Length: 110
Image 1 (cartoon, rainbow, N blue to C red):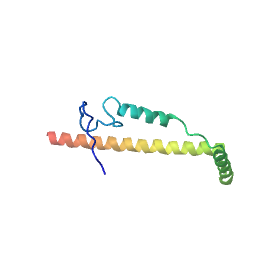
Image 2 (image 1 turned 90 degrees about the vertical axis):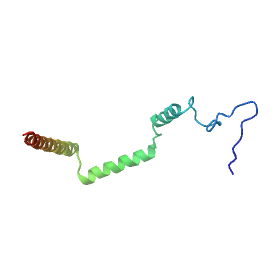
Image 3 (image 1 turned 45 degrees about the vertical axis):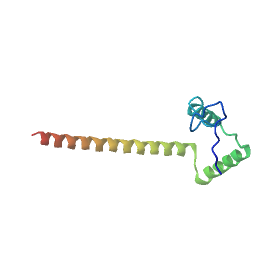
Image 4 (image 1 turned 30 degrees about the horizontal axis):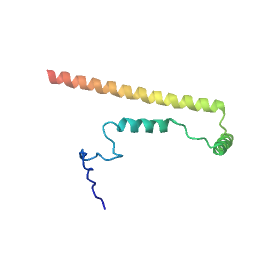
């Protein structure tokens, strides 16, 4: 059942959305966003036991897979090199496309 309450006598009903708890122009989105951002900015409480288990698991896997500081650095360097290479190839492709487009525009202009 949803009944619409009429405004008490002596007061004007301002129309739709004038009830208590409805965000109006004075209390609205900016305040709600600020409250949401404040809640998101607070870090979650750390679960000490969970973090210790995670650290133990990671340590065991590093041993199992033979991961050392040196292999970690080598892997990072390799990944960064591949990323840079991919970016360079993309730049070469863009340059080739631009050259082809310039040739096509020049041919059209003739």
